[in-house]
Length: 418
Ligand code: SF4
Image 1: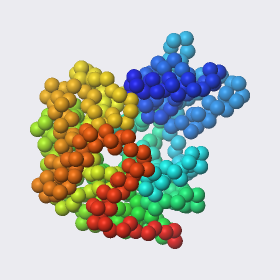
Image 2 (image 1 turned 120 degrees about the horizontal axis):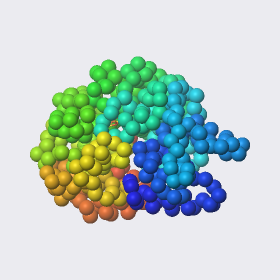
Image 3 (image 1 turned 60 degrees about the vertical axis):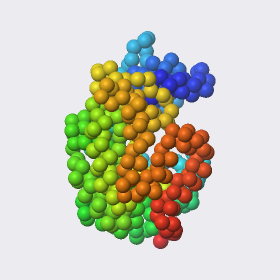
Image 4 (image 1 turned 60 degrees about the horizontal axis):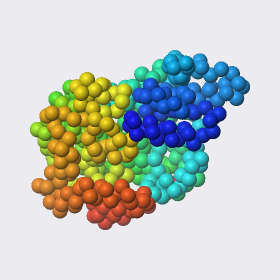
């Protein structure tokens, strides 16, 4: 995330000709702008939404006009950082074209993900959990941060994809698909009139009511990804600024399961101020949620999900860890969620890694001993090492195999466009 990423950025930037200016954008460039600009090869960084900011910058470059006052961008000048004003968030997402997926070999991306297509219907999240990038992303612009495309416009994106690519499932990657109740109800009414692809989405337990859950089921939803993050109330409330209750999470998961929607619960281990005893609450809440079923989803893989806490630069928890002197060097690759990056006295790195590797075993061992043994093996360092080296396609096949077993070899539904 930090030094190793800087090296990667430098390498990418160097690949361009020396006279081509290089601009960074995205979440890291927004949250850790000064770090990104400290890379000598980077000329500027876009903070927040890039579509209009970058368009303005390109138009200026095209007309040989000065770019230094482009809103939304920070630049380097004479060793100083030039911080331009923030831009308003794009209010009407329907005014943006759909993502140009043809710019890459998108069919291959779908194929290696087992016929799964990933898309978003909106932007932003209304909450401010301290480990997440959303609060800082929200601060990078002005105006309304949480927005959706209109339902018809979102369905139009799917129609366009259907005309270009072959896929069988959809994964809506919005941070919280259910934040806007009337939108969800309209979507669930219109979607099945046109499509029958099963879909998965992300949500929050306090934004899902019974009607929404029923409507999602009827529309074809098969998995809902929910963040418990920590089973301990003190950690969730005081450290994560997440004001949902474990009881509510259990209730929502039970309701989803009764409807035939599988809840994929996400958890974090090694949070600031967390103790091994606090983490036992996370195991306990997951045990209760998975009393009746094991979840292994083609879209999300093995569940419940478990991540090792990563202090993202720019977030309140990164600040907290820096203040306490807990930060360790963070590698810049995808294993960052599988290694611990902080060193706390009350929950040592060794204890954190042991808790991480044994988590699913501990969740399933009482009610589902067979699966507990499978996960004991699946979560070992040796298997992780091998999995990381398996090409994406074969990794997808392994996931699909386990998902098929967990669905009791039930064949996948055949989707169709009406
Ligand atoms: S609810 Fe989820 S997406 Fe929203 S701020 Fe919290 S962690 Fe981030």
